[in-house]
Amino acid sequence: MPADLVESDSPEIRDFARKITLGSESPVNKAVKLYNAVRDLIAYDPYQNFWDKSVFSGKVALERQRGFCIPKSALLVACARAENIPARLGFADVKNHLASKRMIEACGGDLFYWHSYCEFYLDGKWVKATPAFDRDLCKRTGLTPLEFDGRNDSIFHPFAGNRRHMEYVNSRGVYAAVPFEEILSTWKQVSPGLLAKGYLSGATSFSNEVDA
Image (tube, rainbow, N blue to C red; front, side):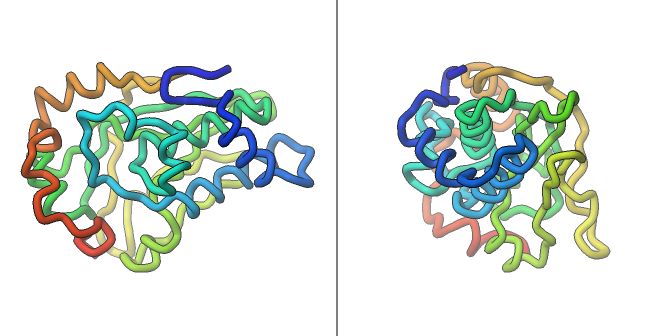
């Protein structure tokens, strides 16, 4: 079922999902293929104009072949639904110890609100899958890409080598659609720097600026 910013009825998304899952019959195998495709074919890029609702769209992420965690998760959910796999968006606040200086300053610290992931319903249970960081970015920063086997949760590693990487500090629940207004409301209150004009001033790319 399509939902706001999760455009599972989009011909572009349906064609993409069909091509990626070609030859697979099992929902688990389809989910794994979709996860790998969205993770690696859509580059992670958090340098966006967050006032623009369209940058939260899964369809737009597919068109641009880049996006941050929310549109990448929205795209993965949309692809799953296009292939008749029940899927939904999960959200959490995370403490990120590996990020660009620009992002940390904009967020007012290393706590990032409304990080998003996908949940598939496979073999009678909900399974988490986090498609945010693409393989190329992981290689550059020395992270191990997150893998997903369709049976176990795939969430960010708490450590990268001997360095603390990611902590989940607060669950914001699951949603059928992207709760754009709720996200923006939170960011206005606690991370206004993400919405300031200066956030993108002089930005090159996240891959170039990230703290590797």
